[in-house]
Every structure is written in C-alpha cells, then in structure tokens.
Image 1 (cartoon, rainbow, N blue to C red):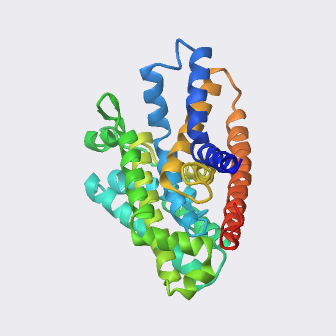
Image 2: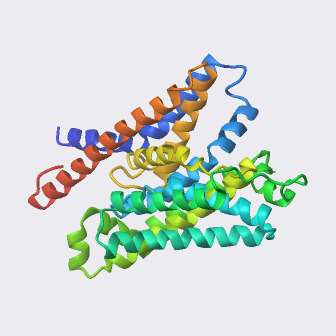
Length: 337
C-alpha cells in the first residue's frame, strides 16, 4: 500500500507535465478523422506553422518576464511599432533591409530595458507600468505613420527581405525553424544558465532572492530586455509577412501571446513558465484554432477560444503553483506530499 501513493503521485506528475502534449496529439487525430481531406495534409500543416510563427515568438518573449513574476503588457504595442518602423526604414528612408532589421531589434532591446527600469526603479507594478509604456509606443506608432498604412512603392520590398518569411527549408516554412531555434535558446537560458535560475527564484520567492544576494533589479531588467529583443525580431518577421505597415495590427497578437505563455506554465515544468511548455501550448492552440476554423466556426469563436483558454490556463497555473507550495511545506516535516 505504501507504494500506491507514490505511483499515483508519479502518474499525476506525468499527466501534469505531458497532459497538454497528449491533448495536442488527440486534437490532431480527432480533426484528422473529421476532416480527412484537408486537415492532415502537408499544405495545412505548413499553413498552420507559418500562421502561428509570430504568435509563438511573441508568447516565448512574454514567457521570460513571467518567469521572474512580471508581466509585459506592452508586447502587442511593441510588435506593432517594430513592424511599422521596419517598413518605414526600408520603404520611406531607403535603408538596406539588414540594417533596418538590426536597428529595429536593437530598438526592441532598448524598449525592453526601459520597461525593466520603470518596473524596478520606479517601483510601479508591471501590469500598470507596461500598459503605460505600451500606450506610449502606440502613440509613437500613430505619430510616425499619421494613422496611415506604410505601403511599398511599385517595385515592392526586397525579395531577400520577404524571403525571411516566405522561404522554405526541408519542405516546411522557415519561420517554424525560427520558433524552434528561439525555443532552444530560451530553454538553455532558463533551464541551464544562472540567469534562468535567478529569474525563477525571483519570481517564486523575492524575499529569498534578496536574502541570498541575488541582484533582483538587474536580472529583471535583463528579462525585459531579452523579451524586447524577441518582440523586435517578431516585428521584423511580421513586416516580412504582411509587406505593409499597419499601425493597429499589434494588439491582435497580445491575447494569444499571453494565452500561450500562461498555458505553457502548466506543461513540461508545471507551475512555472518555461520555453518548451510555451511551445506545446502554442501548438495545441494552433491545432485547435485550425480545426474549428475548417469546421466552419464563426469569426467570434477565435476570441472566445483564446479568452476561455486563458481563464483555464490561469486557473490551472495557480492550482499547480499552490500544489507545489504545499509540497515544499510538507517535505521538511516528513509528511508525504
């Protein structure tokens, strides 16, 4: 009998860690059976990978501050500003596209650093601070575009620039490989390097981080800066995808990004934000949205799906965090978790 609780606990851990991944497979099988002619095809898989690459990158960017217990609500506004700036530098000012992309990514890092400074040194809650800086970025976007779209000239954009999004590798859209590479980098950063361990300590127990001498302010600023780099890169990719500068497009990506990041904290490493979990969460969302879309769902089903999933994600993540805290409290007393 003594081994039964251990087996149940191990089974619960497996379900918690890999349940979302299992759900992804089951959803794919279910939609493939319901839509055998359209869903399990290479064209559909390629379209899903291509369409979800930018939301996936933005979700991974949002994961980094969440690991430190902070939230960056400016990522949607930052995405919009980054993609508009990319278009303006290339189309209006005639910059070479590699230089324009580099400047935009560095600008994203600077904006992320400013977010971190405002949160840590002005001591403003990250929700309020990043909502404020995001509104400022939205105002800047409207100012530099005067509310109008940035449209390329008759010769269009450089082919090498649009190939950042349109090209393929091994038969699949190249943006999918960007997302895989970004996931690998963030996994290494959060799981194997001191910065990631420090961020988790700061996010789970700020008082303990202070007692052991972790410079919380500096590492939180680093987290926002890295997130800004990811947002800047996603903005460049969005410009290559849309090939037109739309000053209001960024906010469409905010909710899916946070759904992916928060839902990802319930997978692989339940109870904390992690890159692999975010990737799994974005995948299950992509499969679900593609399936219900092909089944003929109305336009309002997508925000309903995202909003409902966000509520479930936050609830499950909170439950997992409380369960982990109870386990930690029980272990020193010898009580089985």
